[in-house]
Length: 447
Ligand code: ADP
Ligand code: MG
Image (tube, rainbow, N blue to C red; front, side, top):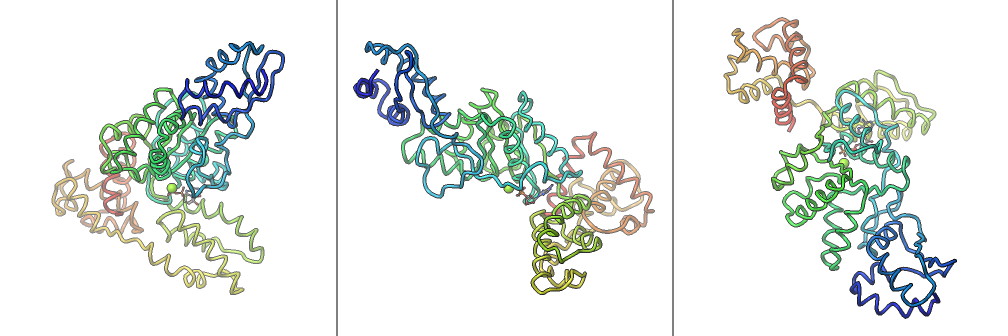
């Protein structure tokens, strides 16, 4: 087949497949020549190759061979690297081509599994993320990760994406925020390219949508997301979703979507505990030491920070960065005084605000009993269990010691408190209801 013959086929092809298909898929094909009965075409992307082969392959072959051109077979070559590559910078403007719709949001190089510190509060989420990142058979779909701000959801999602891509560079892994999903959807609507949009999103191997709470209340986006979601699940493609709260707590989310979100594995990232914060600080330390070789920091100060900055990890990391930069700028060693000076605002902001009294009030409310019964001597289960829950929360959410807590619970001994805390720790894994109660109480107390 000559270039002229290929050119002559265009009008007919356009009529057969329709203008939009023609513009998106056929027109970008570049005929390279005939090689022993094989007509070779360049296609812009790997996705386009798959799509054209599946949808227009036979049609093209029949047209091309039908004109006595000596073509027995057609081969498509990808002329560029795949579109969903890792470090492509974010585009501020509209997606220019169909392939751009499939471009992942940029991934943070630092957000890898290696750099993720695992502790009790995040071990389950981490394990689930690891499993998904192995890229084996899909066992839970979707994986739904949720937790408060700065607890590592985005970090884990990027880590999954890096891992999948390094294991299998061919895989189409699409990571984007729910906001970007909406943006691309709206864009496609405006440009009347919904067909492309649908095809594109249904063609990925793994879809990750970060901060899905964003599309709550945005009806048509939700609707489209739901269809995309279902189509991928039906094809047994892995989906990973994150949100700042559990599926059933996302307001203005349609019920059918909510229940779909819950149909896989739902895991939450708990607020950090002291050990985890310490681990994260230590892991970040090496980098700061390398950057500021003249500075050193006492373990005591690291422990102080881990104790006192209990909000999110981002704040914790920021504090360490600021501390080193500050000390270096003013040319002084990092002392406790300097630390308190430099981080006064952060330390003030993250002072623990939850009091034992508040915990008792909320727990009594929740179980519908009186505070006097909660702290009183009666040992019937209706009071004893909530009491233990309250003790547990006091231990978790305040920096009070066991004897101090005991005193506030009708002058009980610290061993009683210890026993109560232990009991709840055990029940938490055995008894879904208790786990749920704790979760809800913790949220209202920390809100
Ligand atoms: P989220 O998406 O949950 O709001 P991010 O994933 O953006 O939180 O995390 C906020 C910051 O804290 C990031 O810099 C991230 O690297 C860091 N971070 C959070 N959890 C961990 C962890 N377990 N180990 C190391 N860094 C963490
Ligand atoms: Mg995030």
